[in-house]
Image (tube, rainbow over all chains, first blue to last red):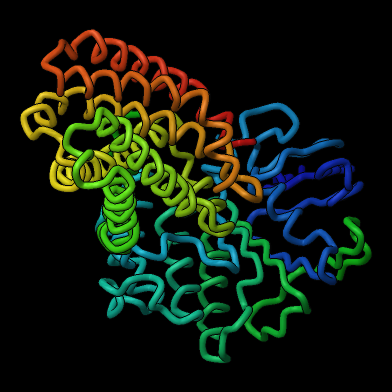
Length: 218
Length: 219
């Protein structure tokens, strides 16, 4: 008797169109809980489009798929969005609010206790910046704020778009350690990056995209 | 819905208080526009002119367009839009919260511009006070319609140009009714007929916004 694990992500021949132009065409992908996957490829390969599909930010134009048990072809995408966490490389918050105000907004929207803000900031090492206006944070600090936003959310799937961009070695090491913790908690993590992950702590599955298709994987 | 509305309302006002765009950019623009209107009328004619209410609403509309674009632009940074979308906020609550925040900003601006029209255009102070109830409802209706049309135009390029063009059919009846009620107040006429019309318009735009804001956000 076998214990089959239900994939968190299960795409079959997935197609995403934008104005008739295929951003993704015929993608087959299965991701399991507690797995780390890195999506790489050149600019325009479809990395961000794949992440946006998994986040419910763009609709599935063809094929079929489920994400966290949610049917992408038939359902209100808002329901899916509540189950995923998104960290974009452009920043994920209101620049004119302080760290505390941004996280309070997220916590109240998700009906989480405010004590989780302190915990999340301690976890990412940003407690001393709690009353700093977000636009005054460095790129690395903004990334840490984004992570604390996700820690408060505790999503089933973490979708991280270019999370290593403009991070120094120390910040990368910290980031890897946090991702390792998240994986241990059972969440699925998907990272888009230009290059393969050069992490010693993490051993991800790497998928290379090209022209909206999976070109290779290792 | 109400919980989301209050959350978004407080957040938008906090952003405005922190950025001070209203204080340092929008209000000075409005006062300057009012001053230019006064100069265009000439000092001897300004006090007797029936153009005062119309000029007040013209300047208020220009200021409102700036504020509507500002209200939408804080949501449209790509990363922020995606992150906030994954919070799963009720669109109707977001619409009400943004409308209420915009209305509050317009009320503050409107009262300052009303004072400005008394000083600069020599509009009767007594008439301006009598017109206050209709000004409050007109600005609330402008805020609600503006939030709706702001969401419609903010996704594309040239939103600042598209907004006044697309929103004109919605704004024009409000401005006409607002101007008529202000003129009625200055001439000691009854403003309540216009107030009622404006209140109905406010209710209709609010109902449309609650129903359609989610669809506009998705598009």
